Length: 212
Image (tube, rainbow, N blue to C red; front, side, top):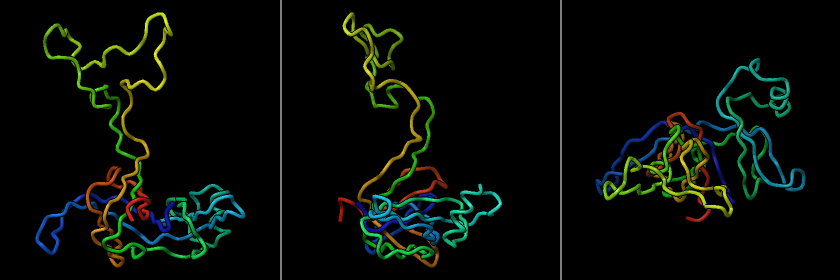
């Protein structure tokens, strides 16, 4: 499990140059200071985690339980409430702010977000099927998945079969990405390569479980 994590917003992709004048493709993440709303401990909640909020939202737009949750913590209500699972939460307290300086250049991180929705897609696009031959008897079934079921036994299609369906819009984690630059003053974090999610998506950045 992670030892440190933070919430950001995907801005988009660009490129920067390193010391050897090589181009590095990076994803820009806006990491506004996160305010800790609740600290969960194994003794009280059965697991360790912190709840953080980002941004600012009018209190009148919350339900009474939601507004009461922020009021009890004495924290200004934010646009989103995100829970971050951590190994050790002893260093965190309610009301504390976490900024981009939590991560430094060269660190490896795992980034989690909801991937872009692609709508209904066929088996070739969704699962990478090769498709049927372009000739040699293939008649108007070039992009079909092929045979999917059995005959009399068991006379059904097994659950989990790779078939056409809705593609994307699911939780995805990309492992072992490198932090190219951390700029707490500009509230920006540059991550090498691409990360899941559309522009404006909420992303969770935590130190790499495997890479470090």
